[in-house]
Image (cartoon, rainbow, N blue to C red):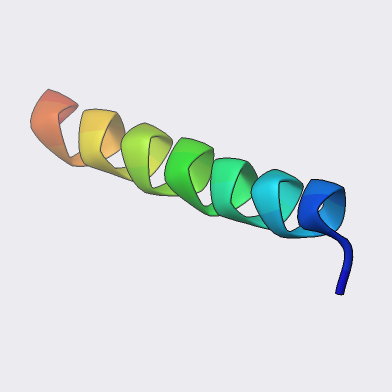
Length: 27
């Protein structure tokens, strides 16, 4: 796996987790 693909995957997971956290905070 390329480093770029790995970093993109991690960033995507982090963004999803952060968005999910914010969504829960609103409720």
